[in-house]
Every structure is written in C-alpha cells, then in structure tokens.
Length: 404
Image 1 (cartoon, helix red, strand yellow):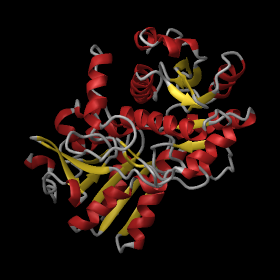
Image 2 (cartoon, one colour):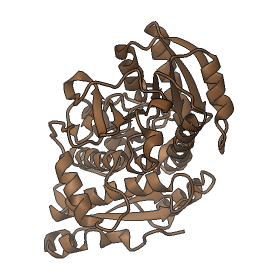
Image 3 (cartoon, helix red, strand yellow):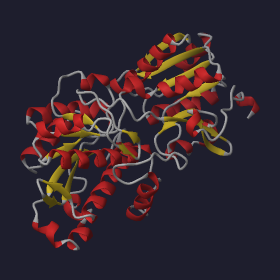
Image 4 (cartoon, helix red, strand yellow):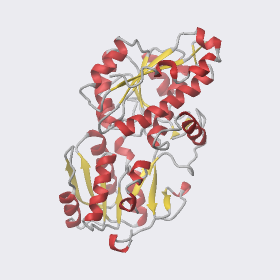
C-alpha cells in the first residue's frame, strides 16, 4: 500500500540535519494519499511532487512556527491506487496508525469526496489541492479548505469567456458523468446561456468510454460552432485523436487538459485546441506567500531530475496549497482543526501564492485562482486569454483538419 514510507522525513533530511533546533522539536506529521496506478496516477504523482517541494522548502527554513516553536514537517504518503473505495480505509490508517496531525487530500473530486467523510469523522483538518466539485463543499464539512483549486462551477468559465470574446455563438458540450467534469461543464454551460451563447447539446458520457464517435457526430449534427469536452486527461486525449480521424471540424475546440506536457505528446492531434492552465513561464503572479513560479520550477528540476515530465499545473496547485497551509498553521498557532479552519477563513483575500490570489467561502470552497486559456499552435503554446497576460491572438476559426 505504501508508495513512499521513506518520504516520512526523507524529503527534507538534509535540511533537518543542518538545523539542530528543528530536530529537537516534534515534527508536524502530514498525511496524504497518492495514486501509484490507475487513471489518476499521472496527476496524483505530479501533485505529490509539488507537496514535496513545499516540504523541502519549509524544512530548509527550519520548519513552521507553531505556538512559538519551529517544527519540521514530516510527510506520510500512502497509496490509494486511484480507487475511491480504498480511500476511506487509507485515510483512517493515516489518522489511527500513522498518527498524523492533519491531512492533505488525494487527487481529484472523486477521491477527495471519499477522504472528506473520514477526515471529518475523526475531526481532522484537510487541505485540498485538486478537488473542485461544488458538491464536496455543500456537505457542511467543518474542517476542509481548498487552498488553490477553484470550484468546478467556475473552473471552466475562462474558456467560454474566451470563446465569447472570439465571436463564438453556439457551443456543444460533452462531459464525463462524475462530479468534477460535470461541475465544469455545468458552470460553462450556465455562463454560456447567461451570456447569449446557444447550447444545442449538453451530453454526458460514461466512465471508461473509449469511443467518442457518437458524441462527436451528435455535436456536429447539433449545428454548434464550437465543441467543449470536459473529462480527465485520458478521455480528452482519446477524443482529440478521434476528432481528427472523423474529420470533425469546429471553429474552436476546448479541452481543459490540452496544455499538459503529456497531452502535447499526441502531436498534431492537439493542434489548435484551447486549454487552461495555472503554470506557464509568462504568467507570474506577485507572490506574497511561498515561492514564486520560477523558484518552484527550479526546485522541481533539482529535486526530480529523472522524472519523465516537467512541472505542470497539478504540481503548481499542490505546491500552492502547501504554501497556503503553512500560512494557516502559523496564523492559527496551533494544529487544532477548528482554529485552522478559522485561520483559513480569516486569511481569505489576504495572500497570493504562485497560482494566484487566495479567496475562499466559509465552506472552504476556493473562488479565486482563475485559470488562463492557452492554444497550441504549430509553433507552440500561447496565452490567448485574458488580455492582461495574452502572448498571442487566438487562431480562430481554427483551420480545418484537411488544411493543416
């Protein structure tokens, strides 16, 4: 079950050896789960690396001040295998057997929703870095906070706003029937309708779908100018290939994972897609808390020289959540879950991390951290929305497949 028991102190061993006063203090034990296998593995492990960067930075500074004492951070990472039925048991193991002080959520809304039931049952604070499903924050949980991941109902709106700005008048939507992607699609469609964009198709597809041809044909038949598919990265990579195979031409296609390094490996099939991200070399927020983008990327390269992929927005989300958590702990001055949650609310609107300004509702739902919209051209990725960070005008309408 354990991915990295050696992680329990190993991430920052060098820093701890250099700080005798920190070694004398009891560590803050923070538990999380990471997917070693399954459909969430790539994203989960990318996020884990972001947390490891944060732990390394914290311990290089002697730890986090809690009630006047500098305490190092000890990360305990166990495997959830992308299986939501395992998650409650593993989080219970972290709490009861590993005696962690607080938790960081797993990847995604599906797994985090399962984890939240357990962390609340045991009155433990949980920092969320990737779960955006609004339904999680509607449960009345007392001790959860989304440090960096904007709510799903808001997450996908930048793409639709960009389409509106380009002149798109109708969009067909397809979405995976799970909380995260359905939340994205619902928020996008609601914004589209409220802003005079026609939505002739709003179609769900089942988990495990490998053939999107019927959905693509329905989108074409609907007469929609543009097409947006909300799902996980694997779903979108398959659909991108099949759009080309079917010669299915829309004036614009949106897939939120299209800027991910692994997505780009499909080559021409990804050309001209509009996507969203929080991490790009030309996007640099005025950081007040934690490391900035360039510093995080530098740490990533130093700590993980042999990984297959560069830092991505999952890395950024997780690192940013760690930076937010550190500020919450120091503000609270205790690891008491109620005090941590109150500090999280009090800090809303008071800091900016590498992924943007932090702002939450009392439920813990993140309402800031809006993503930027990118388009992959034959010459590379460009920022096309919003105006404040744009590096190029969008290619719109996109060229037909036969003309590329």
